[in-house]
Image (cartoon, rainbow, N blue to C red; front, side, top):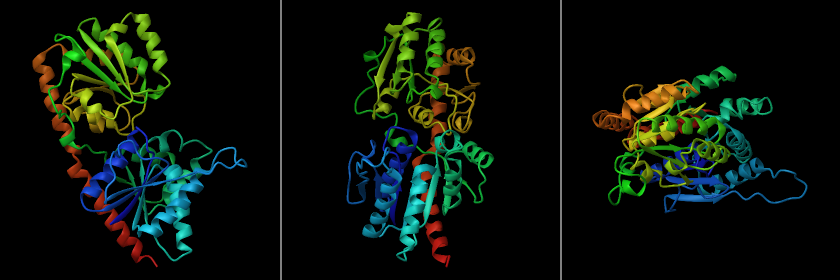
Length: 379
């Protein structure tokens, strides 16, 4: 198949999923065309099966905000015609499904019928999409997609609750390439990050308020009272300075290291004993899955799709949002005993295998084939 994928090219979960999906489909022999405003961060190399088409938005003084959706839909029309694209797969209802629909309509004027699959990731539903300004456009985009998927059952139910949806939504979860996780070119150099007797705790996110980075600091501070440890924070965002101030206030600066954004998170997770994800909202919890794939148990909240990924008492523990005392207690129950820690590490890896790339990507492939066939039958 010739497949066009539209996504955000950033470190966020939707961009990572879309890029990894495209690479996996290319490895299966499909021609994959990424269409976005810059090359996705996870798309290290292009090949004869993987292509990138940049969406350039002209800087025209008439517009206060440059019309990306217009530029994207026009680019999609050109890519579809130039490369015989058979299906569009857009990640995020807005602006991508909205732009995809406009591209479909322009192509129909030329007698070209191209089906579109829309994958919902979370923010497009729970935050942006549910805003009164955007809700009609999101509803329209979903209902006019030829197929719709969500990354978790929780997100599917949120979508059906908050929007008037007239078409089925299929749950296809995020996935992980286990062959790339927990593996190192050389030995894991723990002594580069901590003393031999210290546990290593890690948090990975975009450090926005919804990720509750201050809760991470509070949990870690309580862990330190009973267990020698180091905290590694990966990512960048608006709550970084607030967290640094709290760390300074608690006098634990020497125990915390900020790593910034990284496309080699698995190398950091190789060093890690426990992963903290106290988020207010997580439609799936890809960061938790990546940790589990690297044999790292997870302490997380029980919101959104996290209970579908992190199994309470097996791969880690779940607590209510803001209950830092509970999360610290659960963390210590894992960290203080070597045998318990190793058992949870093994369990985390075992649970991650349910989301192996070999199990999930064929579901998208089958969905494409079915959607193309159904579209061809419609007069």
